[in-house]
Image (cartoon, rainbow, N blue to C red; front, top):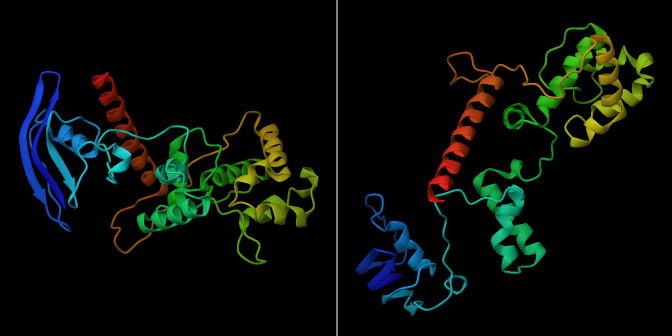
Length: 278
């Protein structure tokens, strides 16, 4: 239970005075008010981020008015951007436990469970060399490294003259040979590689390491000699989205561009907020 009794907080010329309320255990409360009314100030006071001029705060019957934020056991998520550019999704999820000096197994278990519950486990470990976020967004729709692999398929078409579907699928499951693999095998002599080596490396197409393979380097070198220009290392896969719920033509490119637009809007709003507060 949260109990606030005669709370008074002063910030510059602004003041919250004589605030009192209770939130019973197992229930939730909603603070409503215009901008500048003091909603955030009140929440920061509960967490210990604002000192009280008067009043008391109790959590489950324990007075925490003078306790430090870390000693109160309260989680607080600010509305503005609070991410570290140098940290991965996994590191962000485990950050609170890390600063509390929890053991590595405990952190790993908690992060795995939380990411599963949130449905974002696929975001935890995804190293890539993309220069634009949109290719990462496309991959989450089309499959791991689909944007990189689609660019590889385009290079294979350039080198072999064989038209290919740029869907990001480099090899079929099992021993079957698909169109992309057949086109690359036809270039084996020019690549200086055996067909077995080509097959093995194509099956690494769902890994980051594939772009550092001999096959990737030699194929692009051959394709760029044929084209007489540098070729992109990532393009949006050309995949039509299929579902009984879809009544119009939608593609992976449409999905990625939509997510990219939302991402840019969020970043713009975040930086705009930082500039105003600064």
